[in-house]
Length: 252
Image (cartoon, rainbow, N blue to C red; front, side, top):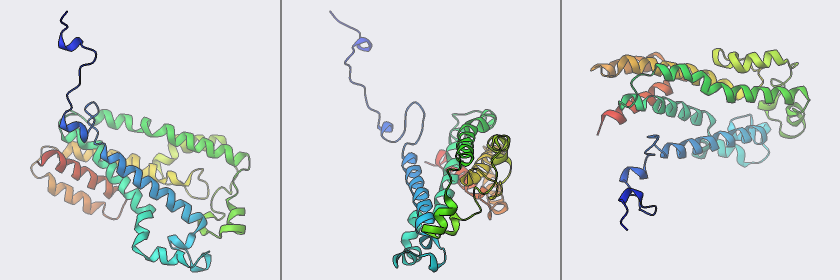
């Protein structure tokens, strides 16, 4: 009995060469996940060093626990765990990924993505704030004790978690505050959420700029103007990523 080729259960799928670099269903460049992973590891290591080996990230030498901390900070190896560099890399990746399909012609409009952006970011932001609120309410933060008795890290001082917790304040912070302003360190439930502010506004910035510039012959001039305007801010990384996405989509 002869079966049609499409009905054979053990038919070997033909492997396309593009499968080695991207997912055929999502068009995602899988190598970017490796870059994200390395950057995330750098951020984790930087925070670990800031707590237990503060001199290794630039704190005063009096906080050093070993003779190697300051040497490590002044060596090229410090770039491997630089939190600032890793976060900047995340912003560049965001600008690239958010606009690549648009520049490639696979996404007709960025307006739906702009409308969904907040709802994609808010679950993790809100969850982290509420978890932090719970820990603070139960008195489980020991950063001040740890700083004074063990690490002597200025990053672990009294600036964090030294306020009375409020559920409504935490709810507002997780839903609105972290997206619209840089929450003061003295009242923040999650200090690292300062990046969400830039992630939200930076996304909207590149959505608008990409929509304005796609197909324009002089868009590179507009890109240069935008980079100059935001050169000294964290928004520059998003613009760099967007420009790279345009180049990736348009150049051979």
